[in-house]
Length: 169
Image (cartoon, rainbow, N blue to C red; front, side, top):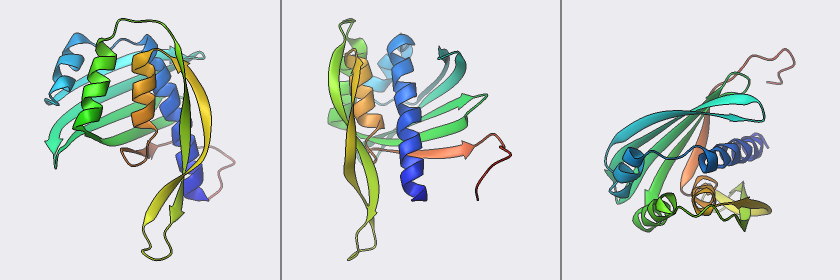
């Protein structure tokens, strides 16, 4: 149950981050480095529903045939989350094309929401589609949402949190 809550929370956080990417332009340097998965890091700030977010995007380079990418999102109220991604080459190409697209025409996309499930035979965690949500945005928004919300590509990690008086441990 705790893992499901973390996954659900991360979907919300990731969706917020992806939403912000529609309005916070990717720099030309980021796009250029992302194309070939060359090491690069940048930090951008954005505001969503009156809350300030700082997003650090870091391209680490290729490892085992995947582009290693991390994104750390921090806010005063929500703490910090990190997405650890291992993106396949075809997805890098799709994301690159989407970031270069100048179209502001919004599209709708039915985004799957995943829940963890332990395989009783192997003991390994697998993910099943637990539902979906319709998102609306430009090409870059939708392509990043598909990647960042897929637990086989990106895994979320809460790296710190605000202390709350009613915390359940």
